Each structure stands twice: as C-alpha cells, then as structure tokens.
Length: 330
Image (cartoon, rainbow, N blue to C red; front, top):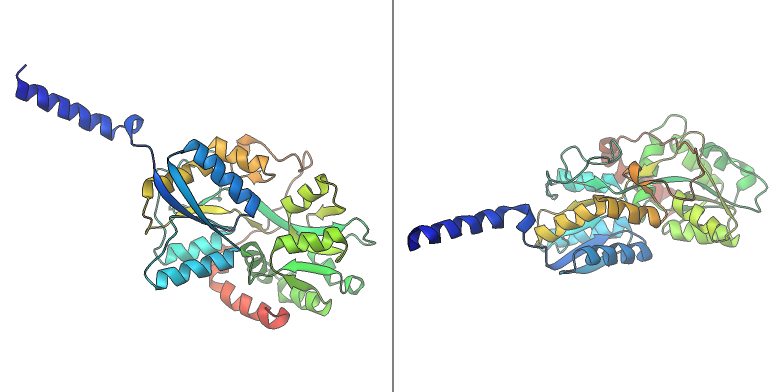
C-alpha cells in the first residue's frame, strides 16, 4: 500500500470513529441549569449528573417556577438568555416557551417506558416525574375533607393554607385546571376566599403551616405531605374524590444553549433508569413506572389524576392569575 493510500485509509477510519456514538466526545464545559426543584433535590440531581458526566461543570439558578420564567424572559428580552437547560414544575410554562420557538427539539431522547402523555409529542420537553396536589390535614383536625368543595365548609374558616399560583407553577396549573371544571370552577376559590384561606409563597410554606398546627388544612403536593409524615410530622394526605391535578416537572433544552452536548446529556440522565431511580429515591412517583413506586405510596393506591388541557391552561393562565391576585393579593 502506498503512503498516500495508507494516509487516506487512516483518515477515513478516523472519521468513522469520530462519527460513531461509542467514540463520541464526552460532554464537557459549563452547563447552566435553571430549576424550580427544592434546594435539596436540585443539589442531589446535579451531584448525580456530575458523577455521570464528570467533565461538566453545573451552574444553578433555583427559585419558584414563576420567578425562573421571569428571569429567563428578562434575559431573552435583553438578548442574553443564560440557561442551557430547564427543569421546572409544569408543562404549561414549557408550552409557552415551545410556542415562542425557544425550545430545542431532541428527537434522539429516549422516551421508551415513560408514562403516556408525560412528554411533548414533538420532543421539546419531557416529564421527569408525577407530582399530584391534594389536601394535607393536621392529625389534630376534627374534620377530614374528602372533596375539594369541602374546603368551602364554614367550619374550616381561618384554617386553610395554599400555595399561590403567582409563585408556584404547580399551583398555577391547579388553578386553571380547577376553574375550567363545572363542578369546581371559580366558585371553589370564592369559597376559599370567604373562608379566609391564605395564599403563601410555595408548597414548603404550606407544609410548615400544617405541620406546626398554625393551619389545620393545606393544599399541598403529595410527596411533601407523605415524606413529612414518614419523618414524624403530624400530617395526613387526602386524594380528593374529584381527582388530583398533577404536574410532571419537565426538562428541556433551550435553542440558545451554549453547550448542546451537555444539555442533551442532562436530559438523557433525567430520563435514564438511573435518573428515574434518583427521583424515586427522593420520594417522587417516577415518569417511568418500571423503576417502581415510592415507599410512601400505599400499596394498591389508584391515583385519580385530574384531566388538564395544557393548551387551554396556557391560554387561560395569565387571566386566571390576575383574577386570583385580585381575590387573594400578591
């Protein structure tokens, strides 16, 4: 073989190896994550991801979904979006970004085994878990509500805490989902207002109020109540008979990412068995049922997830939040 031909063969082999996934360059560099995960969860998620991808440095901005979206919107307006990847509470916020052309479609994302309906059909965002909202009750309560409408009972006046949709993405989904239902609607929130329900900044504040006895009842996400109970807090959780609104804490890559390889690797990790088992270990219901159910969920529990039209929620959410703010204040 001539020297020229040998050089061509070596070059061709080098090209094939570089193109092969087995020899693809490992993601590296800085990855900027914007997330609404609780602080402890965000720390565990990034630590596990960095263990899987040690060459990636992760920078985090963490707050409630509304504040995360507000920060991102301001950066986009200034022409300087910093986030590479988002991991936030609800699909409605992702739908808004998708509609505005801000999300990067990831056709190669591994969605096999994920809960049907938990990810975008165009593969721009992907649910990582199932988080439902129900009613938390202090064990000292005299009354156990079984329905959302029971929160309108005058006997509960002054005893109810709930997360504000002006801060919590899960609460915003809940608001627009519930107000669209004829059996609940704005009548429920008018009853909550009449019962002097207090809207606070997020689910954590609701849990603290109920666990301490400051409030007897709380509108709260499932895992917080069950985990608190397991740790000895005097809290019970009720799945209301009308169903429980749910969010999927989706993950997505922004089109403006400066590190596409690392951002996609983050999505891969979240959807992998390892990432799903991490969600399970944190006490969540994973998006991939095959990895199991959290220990707090009683065996045989059938969760009635409330139907939610995400496109309709997106259309209604700003008007709904404005009306809520008028009723309950900021």
